[in-house]
Length: 489
Image 1 (tube, rainbow, N blue to C red):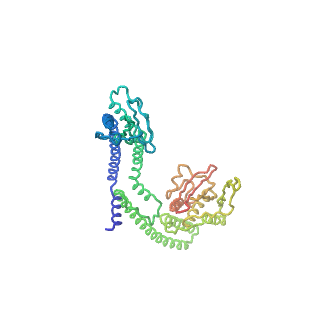
Image 2 (image 1 turned 90 degrees about the horizontal axis):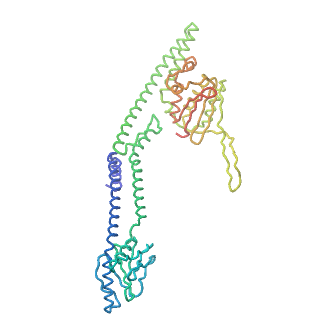
């Protein structure tokens, strides 16, 4: 199998790992990290403490090396390295003339109250050596104190001892006198470890629930009811199972809606035919009063059938989406009402305004405006939008005497307010008027033309455009209907 194919297969298998296994693996990794860090820190601290406690053992070995060097010099061997006894974890170098030259960046200080001149050299900062205790009765005890202090420098260090003839013996211990973590560095390391553990604790839950969040985002995204996009059947096994079940349920609902739409179309066709026959037969009724009543009943029945089919159908979703000059559409609709004598007032969107800012080239703070008409374009279904706002204007005229239509917009949304001068709607009924076939007492009845579907149709069209519709009573009287539509679907 090619490497890319193998990598893709492995990645797919990892994505399909169950959530419970992911949680267990994450907890195990976190435990290993914290316990491993604790064990390493404990090992470092324990080794450091052991070395600091055992550094005094170098004292007798250093004293023995100094005595051996003195004997070698006394035997007439002033040049060359004396024969020094072997000592574990300690090396010695003899320098014939003057103190040894230090590497760059090293410092050196003398040990106070020592039986002979002893210097301590270390890399970087140097802590002042302690004085040799008066209780040190031997050269070994004195050098043991120096060895402990040198180990406490926490840097690479050396001890230099002057011999009787002016030459120097330089000691080094790669084990005890070496660079170690300072308390501040250990504190920083502990803080870094805690920060890493905290970051993992914050990152792991989000990483574990990310497949569920992605599924929720896909399931709640605005979609076309006629052609819904299936959820991605990917990720952990449990999430993929939920996505498959959701897709099957949505497919079944879509099939049901399509079947209902075809059934309604057939019913609407079948009902219009006998209604037409009834209208023709009513024309032959000789009694004019009876004929008028029969024609009114037939017209009312046809209107109810048309409104019901319009509400239950999915015509709004079958209309193609296109870029609409919304302000022009709304103004032409209001003009049509005004031409027929209906009391409809259209308020154009306010002109764009901006504030100029003072710059290095001059200018001052002033407010400017564009007086050109604003087309307020949006992506939508023009016929459905026209039908929705026509229903709102009809309601405002029927139940509120006149309609005031105002529109405004920003970069993301367009807001339309349709207000009337009527009695408004009781606050307790505002949430009910969007339900099908709901009529309010004394206002929405068949005599005024209401059939309880007008606002339901408007709501379905607005929601098909991913918008919002809100009702509220105006403080000065009347009802305000606010429709908010996104400019891009």
